[in-house]
Amino acid sequence: MNKPIDIPNPVPFQITDPAQIPTPRYYDEDFYRLECEKLWPHAWQMACRLEQIPNVGDWVQYTNVGKSVIVVRTNDGVKAFHNACRHRGVPVTEGEHGNCRSEGFICPFHGWRWNIDGENTFVYGRHLFDEKQLEPQELALRPCRVETWGGCAFINFDDNAPSFRETIGPVADNLEARGMSNMRSEWWFATVLPANWKIAMEAFQEGYHVMRTHPQLQRAQPALYNTRYGHDTGGIGSPINPNLTVRQNIEQAFKGMELLSEGMAGMVHAKEVEIARQLVGMELPDNPEQAMMTWYGAVAAQITEQLQARGEPVPNLLEVMQNNPVQAVEFLFPHYFLLPTFTSMSSYRIRPLGPEECLFEIWSLTHYPEGEEPEPPMEPTFLPYDSKDFPPIPQQDYANIPTQQKGCHAEGFDFMRLSPQIEGLLSNYQRIIDGYLGDVPQDKLAAAIQKLGGNFDGPILDLGF
Ligand code: FES
Ligand SMILES: [Fe+2]
Image (tube, rainbow, N blue to C red; front, top):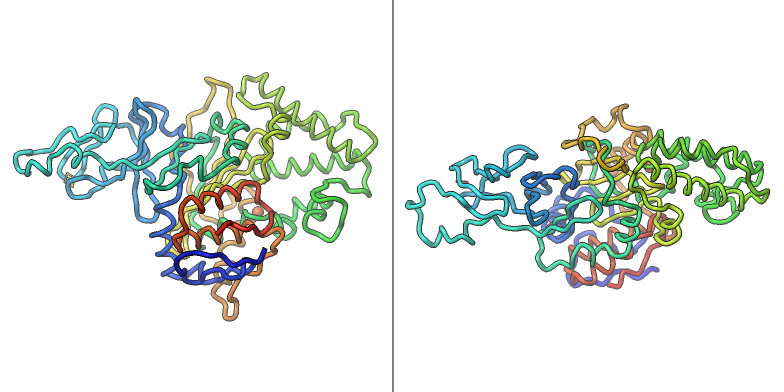
């Protein structure tokens, strides 16, 4: 696939060879401004987790690229409003979250008020204003599109954009089959990274970096990673090392699980590791491939059975692995992604704070028995990006991101050189961004975004424009 994209309007630093990403896209001020104008206001943005707003009147503020939106739980479901007083524009919320059931929203400047449905309920000194300024539709908070999916609220400023589901496509169903709507946040961390938001995203768009960035994972399962990215052959993704016994291969696979769990918590939850541990010594066929399949099948079956027995609303993993396959990382364009392994997941959201800075959040998501859900974290724990309190895997990823940002400015480094086979997701993502910036029609953009499902470690694709 080497076709340059065909877009109506020119974009600065546009991608002309899909395997080459011009580096100014990661720092140029004008390119950043164009993203703020043409990408973010038209894309579905993950605004909050729904367990943050369980009760009527609960609200959270979501901000990105200078805009603020209130997401609120009402009697008729979740609504969203642009956060600006209709009088003179002051945001009508104070703080990041709260409950407005009894008082509604009160502007801190001159005290105008709204109920939780955004209808104005009070203008101090009404007689001082013209009738036409007091029309209810003039005074109502401006609604913002919102859809709920997967335990989150997603907002979009564009009334003409295709719906969230039409945009994300089948990957939403495949993730939902894993019980996403029942998942709760176990912890939530945030950090500010001195890097363009796309540099940060791209650090998670391929597994090719594991060998050098996460050597402990490579060491635990060299056959797995070498067959994917190295020179060994033996079947794509085969975790079998022919030099080891069946039992040793299983021990390696288990060690891999343990390391993912220690390294990234929700990606493989400690409770899932404990269940897998019970199966390391199980009776297995002599054929190594069959043994590995049997073992992973037994792990999936036991995780399902034991967690369901504890009352956790987890899906039947064997069924979903068969019917709703997902990749190790799944991206919901533009800035939210999930790492589904068994029943728990890590989830990430990235927001730009400028051309060379971004806000990076990680949630660990898991299931709890009904009625035993802990209080959700309402705000992230902020840490410096080089904090040793981050789990080891993000620590390793964060180490590269700021230095890569600096490298983008080097003389003579004009573009990233991508593997068209396994770094295709980076190119596909970036070319969809060009589609937004260059005014490709929204239905075509949605069709292209749907192709990102399952594209982790995948090829450069024809995006249809
Ligand atoms: S700006 Fe909000 S009441 Fe005046
Ligand atoms: Fe990584």
